[in-house]
Every structure is written in C-alpha cells, then in structure tokens.
Amino acid sequence: MLNRFAAAAAAITLGIARALLTLALVAGPSIAQVQLISQTAPLAVGTASANIAIAGAGNMLVLFNDGPVELFWNVAPLSTLAATTSNFPLPANACFALPIADAAGLYIAAITAAGSTTLRVSRGQGSLAGAYNCPGPSFPGSTTPIEGLGSGTTAAVVGTLAGVANKTTYICGYNVSGYGSAAAPTTLTISGLLGGSQVSQVNVPATNPTTIAQQNFNPCLPASATNTAIVATLAADATGTAINVNAWGYQQ
Figure 1 (cartoon, rainbow, N blue to C red):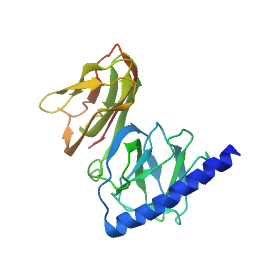
Figure 2 (tube, rainbow, N blue to C red):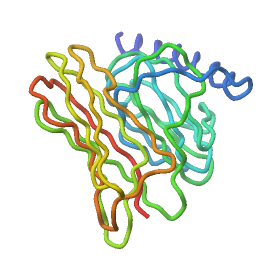
Figure 3 (cartoon, one colour):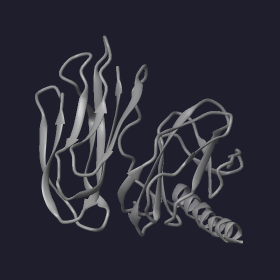
Figure 4 (cartoon, helix red, strand yellow):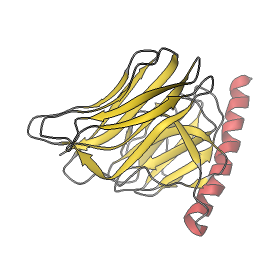
C-alpha cells in the first residue's frame, strides 16, 4: 500500500514537473532559487536506459544535462526504473529545478535518442521551480570530466581532483554542505592551483543541513603544473556531525 502511495505521489510530482518544464522551454520563467545540499554521482547517459539512486535530502531536485545531446528522464521510488524517449526532455547543456518528495529511496533514469551525455543531479531546498542557472559551461572537447567527493564528521573533509601524467587538472566548481552540533567557524582551502591556494573563512551551521560554501569558476581554474591534484579541504571541526565536500572539473 505504501508503495502505491509513493508511486502516486511521484506521478503527481512528475506531472507538475512536465508542465513546469514545458513552460520553462517555451515561455522562459524566472530563474529557480535553490540552496544546494547534496550531489549524486554523475550518470552516464546513452541510448540504453540507465538509472541511479538520488543521494541526499531536500525538497528540490536540480538536473544538469552536461553534454551535447538532449536526454529524457524519469523519477520514481523504483530501483528498476527505466527511461524512454517519451519521458521528460532536457536539452543539451540545460538545467532545470523541480519540487520532489523530501524522502529517500528515489531513483532517476535517463536515456538519449542518439549519442551520449552526462546527467548531474543535485538536491537542495527551495520553492521556485523552473529554469535554473547551470553550474558552469560544459567541459571542453578532448577532456576527461572528474569529481572529488569527500564526507566526514569532525576531521578534515577533502574532495580531491586527481592529477594525471602529461595532463593538467582543472577545477570548475565546488559545493560544501553539512552541519554540526554547534555553529563553528572554520576554513575552506582550495590547494594545488596555479598562483597559489584560495582560502575562505566559512561557518558550519548547527542542527540544520545547509550549504556552507559553493563556487563555480568560469573559466575553470588550472592546477599549478601537469600531474598535480587540486584539493578542496574543509578544516577539522570538533562540532561536525555530517560534512560533504564535492568538487568537479576535468583533466586536459
């Protein structure tokens, strides 16, 4: 019975999403305002349906088609979920935010009619659905997209964009989220950059998960040399309860 209710809720949510997406593509609504909280690993999308569990929590889902072809997507509380080309479209290099049940156990599936792309999925808190400012430009040609994902509690939390021989690592953005048992100041350091480390003073909030810091770089920032990692580090915080550091970029 609960599965039926969950499926019905998902169907209602997706019906709203279809109407909002149509409006976004035709009429161009206001840009959605969403405070990102968590990020799902990227989903490689091709002509065969693929799915992935949606990580984290939040009442808004943000989708980023980070590639050159249109994709079609579907969301439901079903681990065997599949997408077809009759599902909701998301144009190449486009982003969209929509309301979603703030619950675990949700999956997103995607497929393309031809070619391949990458779907990036984030969750957050917000109230306005519609078009959403993408986190940055799609990666240049002849590159390898990479992510550095870290999680922890009271120790330093690190997201590392690895270095590789004969290539330069670039960082295109990062997102740090979490909370602690008490509010506390700490530092966020982006090291390995050409020109030196970037250091920011940030605050870890108490009780409620929230975005601590986020930044998109356009253009993306290079490492100081080839085969050099770029590392995003949130310093140790004795009050930390749950901390996530997500960084993304590419190697070229």
